[in-house]
Image 1: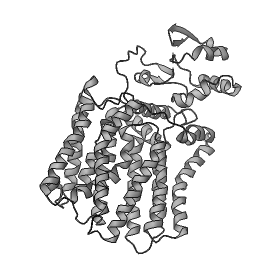
Image 2: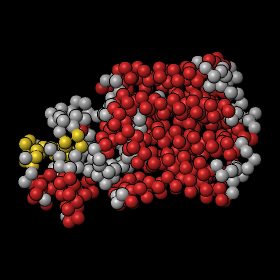
Image 3: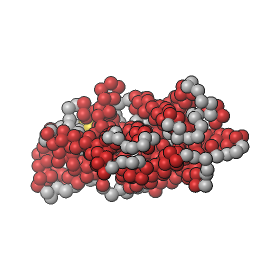
Image 4: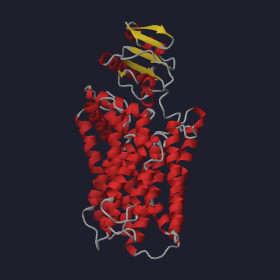
Amino acid sequence: MLSFFRVNAVYQIFSLLILLLLMRLPVYLVGIPQLIPELQWMLVGEQINKGFVMYADIWDNTAPLSALIYAGIDILFGRSQAAFQLVALAFASFQVIYFNVMINNRDIFSKRNYVPGLIYALFLNISFDCSTLSPVLMATTFVLMSFGTIVRQMSRLQASDEVFEIGFLIGIAALFYPPAGIFIIWAIASLVFFTGSTIRQYSLCAFGFLFPVLLTALYFYLDGSYQAFSRNFLSSVFQIRQYNLNDFKSLLVTLIIPFGLGILGFLRLVNAFGFNNFQVRCQQVMMLWAIAGVLSIGLMPFLAPMQFIIFVPALAFFTVNFFSTFKKQWLSELIFLGVFASILLIHYQAVFATGSESFVQLKNLKLNEKLDVKIKDKRILVLGDGMEEYKNNYAATPYLNWNLAKYELQNLDNYNNVISILRNFEKDAPDIIIDKVNLAPKLFKRIPALDRRYKLVEKGIYKRV
């Protein structure tokens, strides 16, 4: 397979796209398990299209541009997992082609071929959850484009004011996926160490990053919802995460091959010869990318293989070097086929295997399909963790994200919180309240107006009268 993609011909672009589609086709046909965050993103898009304002009327920490994309998909397709997968495939295809074409056009490697795109496409399929339209997938597109601009700057004798574009692209990425904002440090460090930029140009890059962020903040300020934007989006980026150990075990199995190959590729470069000064600087920029990716882990909202898509450009870059240093091509071909089969095995078994047969289960990421939810086509509010109840129902009140909502709903001794809750119920009252944390009795005691509107029909379920 490596030998085929080492041929430098334009038709290889189509070969890469076909291969990317073929790798995902089996799980498309069988059906990918729906994910909790995926349903949450669908609900966000649905609520926006009902006229509710993000962050003020929809308490969720989905980034603004991601929410806008989800709203657009909801307008065209409604709650469609297939639409999410097709748009994700479009983003993935662009990244694969852009990464390979940019590397070839700038002669970042000693030989022009399509192996970089092959490895990039493979690493985008390390797990079934990478096939959905996640904020990190969309954000990686813009960070990757900023890398292309940095490479153009390094190929010149002197940096230009094009550095604004670098910061701007990373700012856009942060509005899709906040942890991507860490990469502004990577961009400025790359300009400092590997280009002839001046302090003015560093400042211009930083301003380019802040420009879209400040415009977004200004929009919410003029809309009168800046406080909600700050509380539910900006502040939530720095909240302490509590990660589940089972997810960590599955994550380790999924990531061990791409990260192992990336590290081996980097180690082979340490004593490698034959690279010119420009190529060495590109390698160092990618090393800084990997460091920025590590820093972004602390800001990830949850642990899942999809969150590590931000590492794919750096891992693919160093893995290309790993396979290009073999003197015996048959050996590199054999190792790659083993890697290719192993990654796809991990990808497919998580979908096709059932129960304990799957060694990458991601239980805490999947919707619990076995949960028997008798309530359907109702406007509901869920008090507590979990999104399963929303699958065949609609969200009501702003309290979509329990991690954000509980600070108001559980602090009922605060008079302002009580008034806010009552107003939110009056604006968008649910037909059904599903109480998982036994909060409703205290809520109704504090707000008698709600107590008169809802009655207990079975344990933990209240219906509007």
